[in-house]
Length: 289
Ligand code: G1P
Image (cartoon, rainbow, N blue to C red; front, side, top):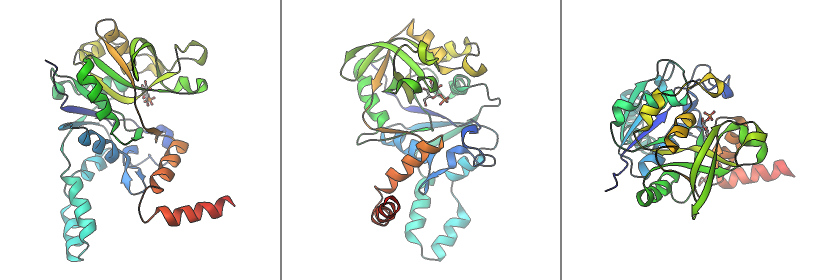
């Protein structure tokens, strides 16, 4: 019998170097798209996909994340006294979102190492990993799409997307064969390959469903690209033992960890927001004339 995926891990210990100076004194995960921190979008995706427990891999300078998902008694009392019911409801809702746990990655040794910090929390069951730089706008949450396929296929799974050739060096890239609609069986994968050495244009996006065997493999993984312990390198070992699938999800992905991706997400989300859409469109129209 296949085991249900109940737990998710969100690595959030990175220093946010691509978004300096905004991330000098605040976590990049707290930078908002319109009025909601990016990490909240990711947590909502996990919860809407049926995940019950979430572990945030935190680090130095990341306390604002914990405060965000906790109660804020003074703020709540202030909003209640002023009769600001809508704001009060929104603030309370955040502190009641799912079971969120924290562990610190004490040294910045890479994504693979960060995921390794989740071992005690995850135990011996399959789990999800969601990276906060990738936000997906879709009718069915990206993780839910993956979980549905995973329930049929078993094994481990990474979300993939075709990217322009000149962008492959920003990602983990798979080599695989298509084995069904939107599904590839992965034979190998490479972290941030030079353009001329990439095995395909199918890049790994920040959603993973992993077998707990990955923890042993992470422990055996030496530093790779950028001198960091890479999750991709541990996955490369997993492929030799077990099935790993690449799933081409439906939806629009934004890399909100850099300026242009962040701006695109902001514009698209603003154009969907009631009360913002029309005046914002007017503004854009005038700008583009
Ligand atoms: C990480 C992974 C990479 C993946 C990417 C997706 O890279 O190491 O394999 O393709 O996320 O966003 P990072 O963006 O942390 O450099």
